[in-house]
Length: 488
Ligand SMILES: Cc1cc2nc3c(=O)[nH]c(=O)nc-3n(C[C@H](O)[C@H](O)[C@H](O)COP(=O)(O)OP(=O)(O)OC[C@H]3O[C@@H](n4cnc5c(N)ncnc54)[C@H](O)[C@@H]3O)c2cc1C
Ligand code: SF4
Image 1 (tube, rainbow, N blue to C red):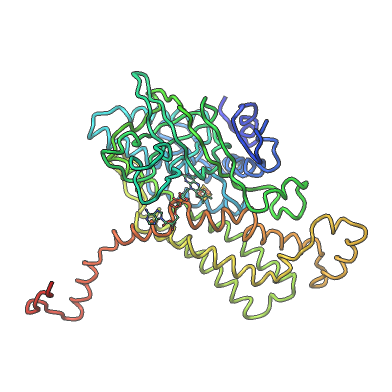
Image 2 (image 1 turned 135 degrees about the horizontal axis):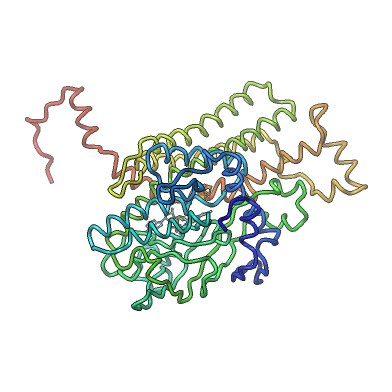
């Protein structure tokens, strides 16, 4: 039976006997772990959105002829790409965190065209296999984790030059019926909350790196896979019973290190196997998709701007001109993120395979804005919040018959606003700028889909500076025919 509701999704994660380690222990049932559960709730909301708004959260797939979850849809026109962004902003607004499904969505769309191109060049069977895989995922309505980033060891060396070959995922054995892979993928968003993983190479590869040119899919509970859960700032507050101190008790993100210890993948699920020259196009098409997926942060920005405006209102400062101006500045930065992302999607063009690929320049500009603007928005939110955001006593003090009344006397703000509401909003701002969801709002904004320099390299490649020089020279009336070439 396909998963159709958020509740069915949560049930589908139960009893899988995954090898998940958190705080040094094997987690018996991740679904019931208080630190993990908020991240599951965030993914569940993607199912809820599809139930509530089937146009935004879903799309009709030509592969199955049925409406499928938008995260599993292969884009068939530019509007499909735009709708992904609208959905991502909406989910960011609903959860205030990373809802984890876009890496899989973007991996599917990048592999769709790369498998096609690889087949044209090498007469391989990848594209049909891949279409069959997507169809299977759509029929089951599964969550897919996109596993690209390797631990990478010494960054000055390529995969084949590393002292330990396992710091990049690679093929250790080729059999007639499939391959065996070994290695790890780092920082993997939502992997434990997924049903399947799609592994891809992380960088441009050379002939020497042939064994690292592997892309394959496998179930999350496949034998030989171990997950080591990433700690998030203030995550242990989730162990305290879900009070105001958590800031956002319902939703959180998830990252883990995935270890592949000689994992067998049958041919049916292999989509690249040694075609090293297609690693670079795969990375570029994936990042182009994923860098404009970061409009999710505009949804989180909406929440943070709302929290900042609320706390200013509670504090009695909302009419001050500098406060209004700071909120305007936050909105301007936030819409700039969204503007570049949605423009990249609107400018999508068809690939040879028939799906749509966003504009690479605008996608990189979107992500580059994301590496900066959320930090400034967070700074302004902290400015408006006041110092109490970080000096606020714990829930336990508010619950105490000794300290509770004292705190409620001294932490009053504008008349008519309860101290409890004030501290809830302060904790939300803390959560998004210093706590658990700062992982998603800030550091993920910096490094997810590539660190800032990766975008600058792409922008540099695509900026067509010679064309721009010609434009300037023409208007300035420059005549270089008599100029002497510069001495070497
Ligand atoms: C919260 C979060 C979620 C993520 N989710 C996923 C996911 O779901 N799937 C996935 O595949 N990946 C995911 N990533 C990984 C993300 O793509 C990487 O973090 C990013 O590509 C940077 O890699 P890195 O973290 O290894 O940092 P590094 O590559 O070590 O970068 C650190 C710094 O070193 C610089 N640097 C790196 N290499 C060189 C070099 N050769 N020469 C000069 N300078 C260099 C960089 O520019 C940067 O300034 C996630 C990351 C985060 C933080
Ligand atoms: S960081 Fe944003 S784009 Fe990436 S998976 Fe999370 S919500 Fe989606």
